[in-house]
Amino acid sequence: MTPSADGSVAESARLAGEHILVIVGTDHHPFDRLISWTNEWLGQHPEKASGFFVQWGSTSARPSCPGARFLEVGELADLLDQADVIVCHGGPNTIAEAWARGQMPIVVPRLAKMGEHVDDHQADFCEKFAALGRIALARTLPDFTKLLSEAVVEPALFRVTNSGSQADQAVAYLGSLIEELVSRPRWLSLIGKGHWCRHRRRTGRTRHNITGS
Image 1 (cartoon, helix red, strand yellow):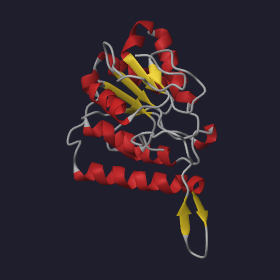
Image 2 (image 1 turned 90 degrees about the vertical axis):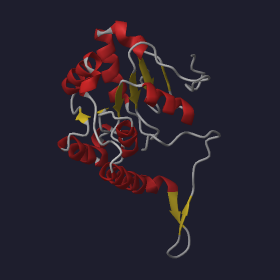
Image 3 (image 1 turned 180 degrees about the vertical axis):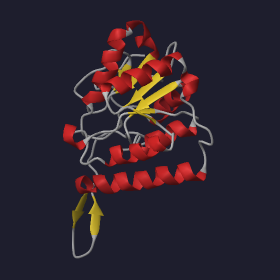
């Protein structure tokens, strides 16, 4: 598996050994913090790097392990299915995908003060999810290091039950709606009185939007 020049994966992605998947999402804001934290952990455990796969998105930092900038639909689904541990940003869609596979993800929410998103809606959602015992919330690097070390040793501790419940689906759906509204200034322009028109940027390729914003 060799990423192409733009960081996409030319053939179906596969994890080796232990299956640790790290997802930053498709938002245009960089999320170097999550990549840097992952690299710092791998620097202390270099023998584990082959079991990691990092989707790094718009970050300037590069992972010190296999990865790709963005993933196609099937590639991401395969990686999620294989993963023993899922580490991700605080997008409700991504979290819901982990739940659908019985996983309690380790979550690092994007923060506005770090230039990682337009506001702190991810942090707000994640505090609620953590209080319900549905995610393992990493607010700091020591939190992240401890949680990731525990998950690598004992992935079974990071599991959820009733992952397909209506409550989980409702929470994820509400979160996705709010993320769309938060992102709307980038997409919408007002034309005519009381009418909105959505304009999507032309990218030349289709990106899987499962990771939210």
